[in-house]
Length: 374
Image 1 (tube, helix red, strand yellow):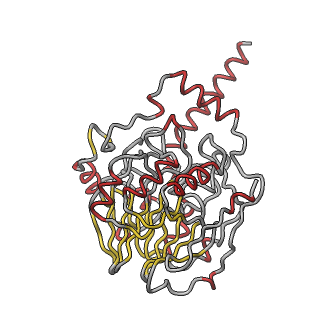
Image 2 (cartoon, helix red, strand yellow):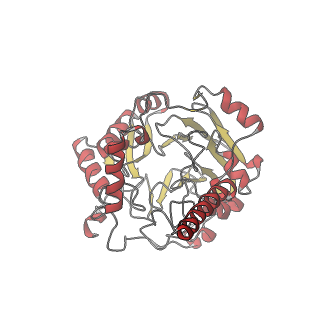
């Protein structure tokens, strides 16, 4: 028995030490900001008491009573009926020949599932939150697996990109493998304050990265960008919670105006952004991966509809659904609830299938395709 206990404790110790070393040195966890960027972080109005803060008090699930956390954990272990589709999701397969130069006028959109959206805005091609990996995880064998086995197009066949836009550093939005494959065909990266260190560790040159704090702006060959508030959090490891900023994005070019929400709980910032930068031709807002236990950092679908109205949006395209199961609701529940809420508010809802390339100038994709998928 003593020998068995000694062996068991040794194995546990090796696993613990190995895990700590893995998290300390594995590149997928990214890197911490240093130098001038660290000074900017420490001087940011959003950075207080050693970490970035939301504008409003935002209770997190790890602050909940112990029994509540046990109940949530048990539900995750038990699984949720219908959390993943049984059938293959419909998808438009694209080739490199489908992409010529970006459309010189107007807004074209291609949704890759979850929050990954390829935009063509008045001649500029912008990929927002291009998480195109198979799992939302730092490792390939643990974590939520993508619903679809394939993407609409391989990363290698994607057209050249003018801009990659990142909202925050969580694994379902920022993927090391995707960045490594995209950085050679991307001219510039715009990211929230602190996220640039991750990209530099993965090989993106510092001169190709612009980091912005909330309400800071930048321009790129006629494209206007503003990093705007969101209500969320950040972190890729056990010790870097809220050491990088999270944000939403305003994009303007000519007469076109687009809002990309990233991840956010509902709050007054949507109305503030709408008053300052609205109206928007298109808003892209999260509608999935919600739960009452983390309602301050992810919106309920009905709040998504209200946020769109606060932003003074014309067309709403829901994101953060259709690719991963990261919560306890059935996979199609978010779009069902949002569709009902949008109809009640007479909101124009765009619901493309994955890979469908559509334009704001044409008839909106509004087929309720999920109804035919189990």
